Image (cartoon, rainbow, N blue to C red; front, top):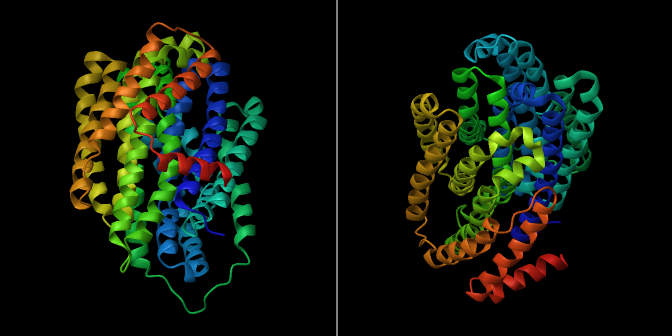
Length: 476
């Protein structure tokens, strides 16, 4: 049964919140139990695993979502072809990472990393297949099932990591990803096994792989961008403890990015369906305009509030021994906020068939980040690394934002932006006088979030249409 895009987005955000909750539980346990030095190693290895794994989790699977949304009658045939392609790609990528492991360790000036990278080359193979089913369900607009499958992966991953962490240390924590991938892939296969297959249908492999490759490179590029500062800190400062502090800040700063990544699972197939030949152009423009407005309402207060309370966040998640990560987090929240907007604009552009634009801009951001890091890290240390990512993210957002508004002929929501900024300032100001620590910080977020919503209602940014949307979501 298909769902509306709005309720689907909410379901996927809830699922992504579960992914974040269980994922961060693992981070917190490792950070607290093993200390900054070993946690720094974990962060570097996990970033390598994520970069290579994203080629598998977001390349062919995202193409499945787009092509199924545009041709649901041949959905099962597209799924079958995609699984075969994914098998070949995953074997090749795992072998490539295994062969490259000594070179990666050499580049990061730590030969001990070789064995960890070899281990994750096996892990990414077992993660390769569940995303196919996740994105297939999204392309069919079965967002509840997609959200549930995503949640199953997160729960199984955490359970596996916790079961093995105490016995195998970092290896056990990394192995949890494989356990989650195997269980979620089996469930996805079970749910889709009885969907009828159209005989004689074959996908256009070149178009399929062209989109998959371009889209995957964009998202892998963003992951490289978000990890480049950590890699450069590890290689240039040559201090695992400093890398641990920086990894703590990076981990917390990615919360908004990872949570809003769930919206891309709705935006990509939705824009693809709305912009296919014969579709209502005005309807597509209205959908994009509404999506951008809601993104501004969600992202702006989140990143500003987290920046203002960075010290409390670090202590809450990682304890006071990571307090040096707080000023880094303040800066990185701004940078990851820019990348959150950029990610969702890239999905809108990709869904409309303009994925190469995002590819070129992402490449430029990576180059800009590397150049900035070469100057800023030696001069300012960890703070310089944080500005490296933040400045590169802001430049990329400006470039892609200009392109998106120009091509889709969308007027920038000036009034909404002003209202959100005013409400954000009013909601964040109390944090400079109302100081809380520990779990009470979460209560403060809830109170200030409600205050933010009330202000938006007072300035009439929240309309009767928004209230009706909210009521329909609650009912569904």
